[in-house]
Amino acid sequence: MTLISLFQKELAKEAITTRKMLAIIPNDKYDWKPHPKSMTIRQLATHIAELPTWIGMALNTDGLDFATMDYAPPQVNDTKALLELFEKSLQDGEQQLVIEKEGSLDQPWTLRNGDQVYSTDSKADVIRMTLSQIIHHRAQLGVFLRLLDIPIPGSYGPSADDSSF
Figure (cartoon, rainbow, N blue to C red):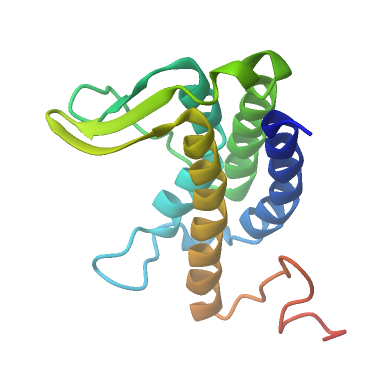
């Protein structure tokens, strides 16, 4: 089994759980955040929805420099638009994970802010980190929603909110 095929399988599996979590965000809660240092639900959910695009960025570039990037997150105002963004990002990530790119997975990829280098890792490690970031931020979103008393779907089995649990 190739790394690309493992990444394809994991992305597909995590997409199911991510889609369930994003789908339960109430439209009137996008500006809520649990703490002044926290992101709003809008910022967090938008980040989660865009993360699959990091797969293509990892495979098709040598790195990301925050000092020179020109990025503005899309403005998401409701769950329908959020899910559309996620599906578009997911499709992008899936289309990038092709067996022809297996040979590039050992190449270095650098995350920096100008002269400050945060990390240099293989492209495979960046894809692994991207999948981990989806899981990590999805769990963070789960905490936000739990604090709002919104029932949470199970991720790798039932949640405490599932009636069969």
